[in-house]
Length: 339
View (cartoon, rainbow, N blue to C red):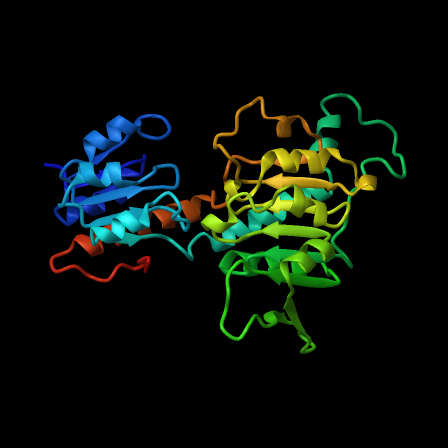
């Protein structure tokens, strides 16, 4: 009988750790995500389940697994694909990988911002198209970060790492806002200290001030139901004209039709300069999406954590979390979600 169902392809070298601990596993080896009925059929009677953001774990899956299911380990920092209410009711432990992907995702965020602000895709496309002509003083000019205002929505691990990296480009201010509530309010957050002792901080501001003041706005917040569609026509209308909008958090936070309107409105009329997205709704984004036709919108296929080293470490931690929870007696997970 199978002890663990692995709803994705993982390196055999990592999965062998399950075998070493006496756990029999079955691994999905097809393309993409396991079909729903396949998943429901394969989880019956398993003790553990390994999944990722694209695999929805809800009451149907949990009921199919039955009372043997003791632990779920997701190869992600986000967990909005997990029905935590149903999972908690069954006393099932959950492992995740919160800190491993911080640096890789922050690097990707900065890259995405620069791609949009410096019009790199547009410029690159002129080369094979034969449109690279004689040098012109104002051809393909973009927006610079120096002396700008950088805004971060969600200054958690990833948000702080993004802010720290962008601080190296000498913006005038780095400001942040959060969707949560912290006792005593939010305070300036030290990013780093210069050799001369000058502290570089991120300043807390209201959400409306974040929208109004940011030349570059990076969305790094964790997904919550109240943030679904929060970036809508009203919010984009409050943003500074000519701002660059970057989302590496969750696609569901953005009303993509509203984003399209903000990107096609024109800067003179108060619209956005450009947008960079690593997350969309749905994923994959259909090839006929209007956003893909815009020269000022650059979209990546959710590769924020996609460095070889990071993904390997994420996979190892995912398996280690499950092994710990299924040990006899159960051990603390290296990274356990408390909910």
